[in-house]
View 1 (cartoon, rainbow, N blue to C red):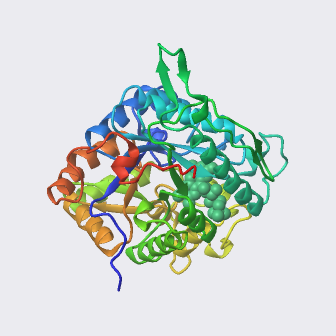
View 2 (cartoon, rainbow, N blue to C red):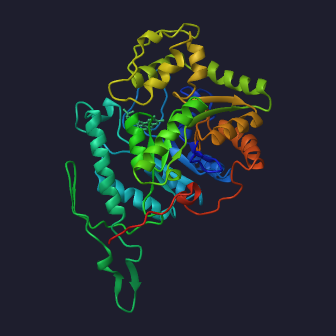
View 3 (tube, rainbow, N blue to C red):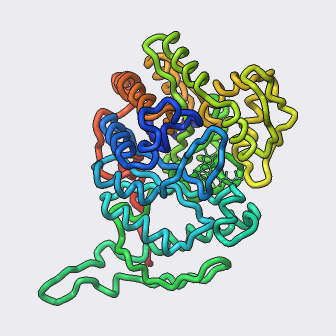
Length: 441
Ligand SMILES: Cc1cc2nc3c(=O)[nH]c(=O)nc-3n(C[C@H](O)[C@H](O)[C@H](O)COP(=O)(O)O)c2cc1C
């Protein structure tokens, strides 16, 4: 069998949203409102992740208010604006922002991300999504979400346009020569003249080429269409994978697709979400998890499932069994995660409490353990080629991350699984990705 295409060390991102990923995290946070709406929490947690030498912090996003009985606010603040502030208080850590290709013009987004890449000195990643929430569509002049195929079509064309814009300045286009009175060499700034089904963009772009050339293209998803997009364009994938076996199948598929597109498969990193509960003993880790479960509002979880997966759950208590028969294999707007959820509960009787243990943060893998057992698990995933690392999604922020950084990271470093120092300055260098080369020949 061919060697798996994985890097020899882990890559770790940290999801930075809200008070942590759990719906009820706000109920146990010290300052649940300022944590979400103020900047202090985002900056302090990103700085802690930088001290732990994480590859990047990551902000997920939704373009609509999702009313939830648990009172949860997941992503009220716009990610690019938020990360701009984080950028000015950090130096090395990557900054990944989510932006949907369905509801913005490519020129606008290219400028925002290009600007952020400039003033963060090359630390930007873009989580490219195309939306799944009909409420978002209603905020942008539409009555319904465009059909899935249309959203994907627009996403591909969107990437074509923004890539052309980001590539349209030669690296040496800025001359800034006082003697010749020339700031820019216009010969080195190129129009793009894009005419397509969704966009007409002439250029030239007005943002010079940024340190990374383009932001790192991250892709969130699991479906075959998402995997194809990742193979064609993605440089990182954020996804839901529950087991090493699932990870091997997914990762091999994404890398195979990358190869078919003539790309180096090690230039697309698979970084599934992971919810850690860390304790110095297994009993302590389990106790921590139970504290989160007991603080959780069952209605909040059920409501989220209804919104995400089109179920109709209501009025279930902690010990009631969740009826798997109501589960669709795919929902109207999204293919990626309903299947994961279905596989989690279909073949076993699952109460709401069990579900809160299994789905502490959405349908992401929950790992309860000691620093050593968590490092063993990571080593197994990496060794099997099941992923290139993880997107760490603590139930509670900042406490869940502090536990991980203080206890797990040193063990990973001692085992040579994770860096002790950053080697480069940009997110591309942390991930081992090349800077895109523009061939005008
Ligand atoms: C792990 C994961 C994270 C995602 N994060 C976001 C997000 O933050 N914002 C968003 O609008 N969509 C997000 N998505 C949605 C996907 O990017 C995609 O648009 C959606 O899954 C529809 O595509 P599909 O039908 O092929 O699954 C996420 C999907 C997955 C699987």
